[in-house]
Image (cartoon, rainbow, N blue to C red):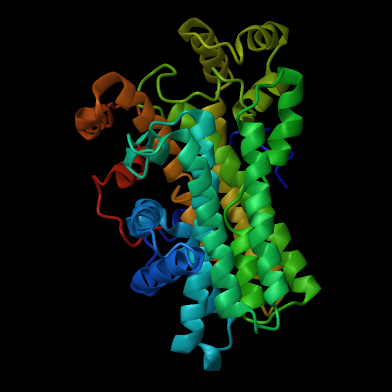
Amino acid sequence: MLKNILKSVTDVPRPNYENRQRNLDFSFEENAIISIYPEIKEEIINQQLIYHQQFPDLKYRFSKLLDYHLKLDPKYLARAVFLVHAYRLLEKPSLLNEINIRKASILGWCHKMHDASVLLDDDIADASDTRYNKPTWYTLPDIGVNKAIFDSAFLKTGANFLILNYLSSHPQCINIQKSLLISYSMTNVSQLFEIQQFKMEEIEKYQNVLKFYQFALPLISSALYLANIDDKNIHAAVHETCIEIAEFQKIQDDVACVFGSISDTQKSCTDVSEGRPSWLAMEAYKRGDEGQRKILEKHYGVNNKESVANVYKVFRQLKLKEAYDEFQKDFYEEMHFKIHNKLPKSLPPKLFMDLLDSSMSGRFRLQRLYNKIQTSVLKKTGNDLVNSHIAKRLENPKLNNELQPVIKAVFGFDDRRNDL
């Protein structure tokens, strides 16, 4: 669906986009997730230290590890929260009891723990300074890279134990495990592409691969299996819909990274300087004239301010941000139609509209954008000045008006707890 985007910029009515949901309430799911954390934390530690009970320091250490990566503001628990939300909309009403909501919450934590494991490794690979508005785990004085690598495995293994402990008798247990592993492997492979540098002519190939580094598909797939729904046609329809939204999210993330930066040049966004696969680079290379292509070939992936500025200049010349703004509205209208008219009748439209509306608000790209911005500012200002420095930068009138509240939500300047 996205192959022919940005061919024109039109100002036509988009009633569904204009009337989209902007504030979604996930408070029930958040409470369900958070309420069971102390219990599963204790269980994970005891299970993995079953032969090391004589070392109380280990229990303290792994308790600190879990709290650092899991005891977070709800905005960082989007995976777990959305899985519970999906399950509530997919399960038969008669089966939505306390026991099954608890199982869904545990499965949500499993996905979050796998995600935390990947992110811990990714922070090491990227030499990231911050995550979750605090120093990355491996940078703590008593941790370091070597210990952090083993800690990543502890997080992943903890999720696997929970699956076995609570869902081994479920008729779809194997499929649930497979969905969890697919999510983990997709994210790992995509992260590998993210840290590589590519030539301009390779960008489109790997940009298309990166759309599979996504949020919703493994969560909704897991929720379907938890509700004992294994119909291949239903799963295929979910797969197609989620992939389309994931591709949009990747484009949205690329645009926000460049045009949502806290300053007018590169500073916080490293996609251009590191030569990462980017939708903006792909579109610029396809749409640019010979001179603009030569600029991209010479400067994309070159880590200096002059090269980055030259690439940004091409982006602006081609009006890619303006074209994206129109595309976003058209994409919403088309997905709105598909969700209400093309999906199997047994699938609740609300689930996919909630996913679409949350995507439009930028909820699923906030964590990445936050880390890019704060890491850059941290290097310039020191940890104590990070939030005040960012707050000042956010007042820059050149920032996109729609993006400002999104970024502010990440840093806590707006009260948006009920949004993912």
